[in-house]
Length: 389
Image (tube, rainbow, N blue to C red; front, side, top):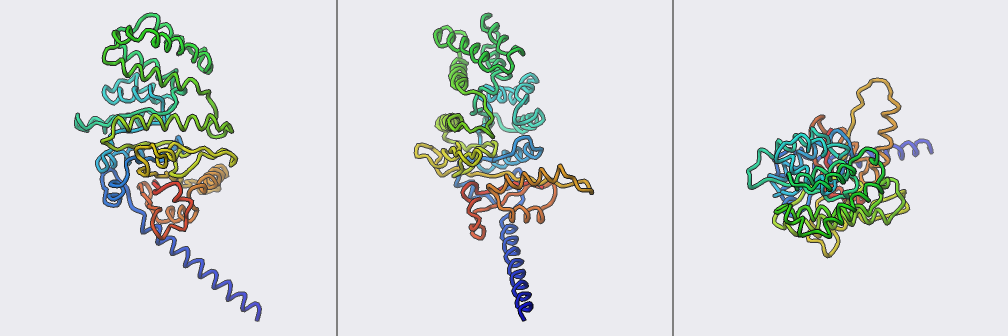
């Protein structure tokens, strides 16, 4: 008799579990839709509500470039996006814009060396840029620390601003700055930059005369690079130094605010590392330290011009196992990714997406739907998931 009751109980629990799983599956499927470069039906209300659309990625994944381009085109046509914020320094942003305008190969090399995206990505970005009307072009703004770009991007940005009139003594300093012997010596590069910076600071009228209409941009580059040089390089993903983390997030936040205040009549797009992304998210370091991300600041701070107007997407990844035999390395990577992903995405949603989407297509999932409210940890950070199978 006891065995019979136990069997009945187990059957009941199994049926209840299957019904619950089916309910979740139905909910996810009904709020998942294909995402392409122009259609805006599913996101029409979202585009009317928000000003800044940001995607959180794991760096150096092959899907990132395609997702970036698809999202940018969709947002350009449907959400009045005209400014792209990049996870680069200001100098790199200047060089990206120059490449978009001219297609200069030297610019292509420096903007893709040790950067978030490859040269192929920027070639695709230029192709889209060239298709747009002259008075409706988008622009790129690098808002991250200049420290990481000072060797590869600072010099070409400055040389272009001077055109053919760069003073000889500055040429000597720029050559020192890019010398391979100090490639990994941040203090040496900072000292050389300081000579460049203080010469500008004490001789502004001379620089204004030489640079002409480019003087304001040069001044902004000097100021931002000087601020960036106060930051020492550190391992962002594993550092326990909350002061450095806070300063970097605040630096990015201030740069974005400045650009938005100067360009209030359009909307904005970005794709950053997921460590920075989340509407109420803090950057977590070894579960001991928490730092408000720049997106948290943009969406919550009172002085933010886009308070409560940030729309955040988490990119999730699906890698198909192509080998028939077990692959321990692949299984380990999948397991580690699952552990990290669980910080912001329940495994139930991930499994449903894997089972009900077509390979090669990009999808968006609205996780703010009423039937998914139970998954509160997602809602604290993102309104949408974006996914390529």
